[in-house]
Image 1 (cartoon, rainbow, N blue to C red):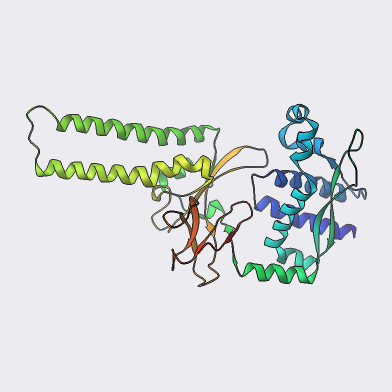
Image 2: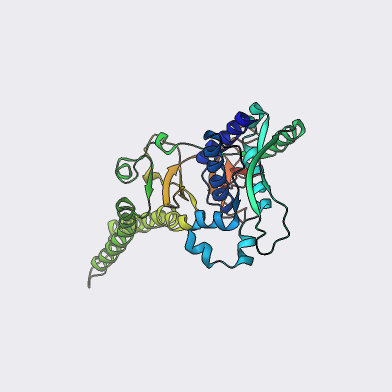
Length: 326
């Protein structure tokens, strides 16, 4: 059982390192899993337990834990939230745990609360039942399971390759500031160019020629395309967390890519160029990130490349699954 636990916990920790998430349950689960692995490697048989206060102090810092009221701390994380997130991880990676025959589970002590009666959490294992595996496979027929491509595998355009090292940048860094300067500098520079161009065209006594009208239409068209497909998506990135990468970000032979903003294990904000892969369960074509409008209310969806309006799926970058919307 000792070696079995270590095998299950290592499998879980590898999954957590691969599927990064900005989620409270994810952060707590990673802390508990890492400590449990270290204890097993040191041949410590006792369960490694954590209270809510300890988890809060590790995840958000001791000062934040000290300032939080005990009632709010009780709602901050629960065994239900931890196990719900853990169940989603197990469902997504059921094949890994199927080979072992056991799955991880969060356990807690039975306590009625009160002073000195803290609820404690620890990681354990239980045998994976065959009927659970079959149910997961049945549910998967109605879902799209997404995978994230390694940023290093995506070819970036030569200019952005100077900014995105190995396909990602730390937002609060020199390269992050350079990226901000490029974004806002381009927008301000283009606005100044339009103003200058307009002043030149409206000089007193100047007659408009056909070439002038052509330049005006080109200017309006290029401004519209740049605003819609370059500046607005990047502006929405902090809110949407994932956007379709503008074509200027990737090499000419790359079909498409996505830009994702996330936090790493040290809580640093990072932005990376990646690609979320998925296969349409209806026609087996690729599903790609697209705008939800005009047929969907959510801002971003995944659309099948063969039937973009008939085969539409939701997209959740945390659980990496999508349900059929139409």
